[in-house]
Image 1 (cartoon, rainbow, N blue to C red):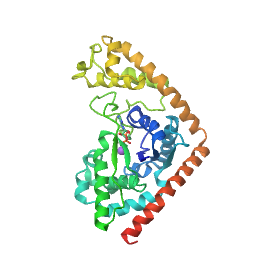
Image 2 (cartoon, helix red, strand yellow):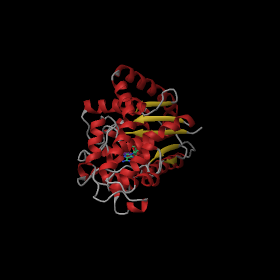
Image 3 (tube, rainbow, N blue to C red):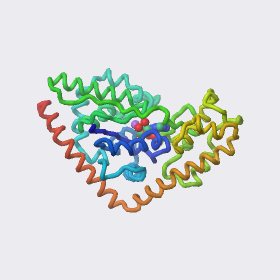
Image 4 (cartoon, rainbow, N blue to C red):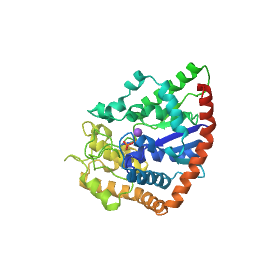
Amino acid sequence: MQRVFSGIQPSGVPTLGNYLGAIRNWVPMQDEHECLFCVVDMHAITVFQEPQQLLAQTREMAATLLACGLDLAKCTLFVQSHVPAHAELAWIFNCVARLGWLNRMTQFKDKAGKDREAASSGLYVYPNLMAADILVYKATSVPVGDDQKQHLELANDIAQKFNHDYGVEFFPRIEPHILGVAARVMSLRDGSKKMSKSDPSDQSRINLNDDSDAIRNKIKRAKTDPEPLPDNVLGFEGRPEVRNLVGILAAVTGTTPDAVLREHGGKGFGAFKDILADALIAHLGPIRSEMLRYLSDLPSLDAELRKGAEKAEAIARPIVTEAKRIVGF
Ligand code: ADP
Ligand code: NA
């Protein structure tokens, strides 16, 4: 049985993209592997977060993960800052990773934007903390989307350099568990950008706490073109927004874009958007009510997260203690 680590930032309300691209795929993994799922609040503050909002979003993310089907009897769910071993190993990794490696990370360039001098140094060393998140459990499998592959390669470089510099075979190799690009959900107002919980300029995203009216309105406003739906996937060429809406319906109804087009090809978008909104409301409605149920009892939720942190700490503590001994602490 492999040990799997996966993290998600509480940097906003989880979106349909997070759900279809990540969270939904974690659910079946619990039955096959030893899974650690982590709400990575330390990563979130690489960009300033209002404290009250960070705390609320951390709980909201945990509640969402439970509502989507993570089961505390089958996995460990916890908050990153509750397990100090992450920060302890991250410091060692800050001293192992080379500046040149970090300079090559594309996500820093994307997230820092134009004014790189004004970005936090935490944003710069974020990949070192991510390596520590995984290796502090000696996890060997990490479910990742395409966008995260570069981070995993860096984590492996750090593990190898640590082993080499200290003459040990301590950290294992991490294998990506690729979730596939098919589940990539794009923005509803611009099919060339991904739907993101942490893009404040784009309010078109579907949040997992949206009610039925909000979902229907966002789908109605989604960008399309005047042409009807194509008859097959070749018709997606030059129509990224159409590809995206068809892909979303396929994902929530458990079918393929081909099958969606066999059924709905030739329809106009007025009709198709109603069908899509109905399917999304049917799929997301129960998740939303479960999420609200978890959030209506914060003391219980907090207690579960504390228990999760204790389980995680029990695995991480001996590993970080040994890493510190190897370093000479
Ligand atoms: P966000 O940009 O929404 O803040 P994160 O960077 O926190 O997302 O990613 C959390 C997880 O959700 C990752 O596994 C990532 O691959 C996945 N993910 C994020 N956005 C999308 C999307 N639009 N489509 C599919 N998966 C996504
Ligand atoms: Na991220």
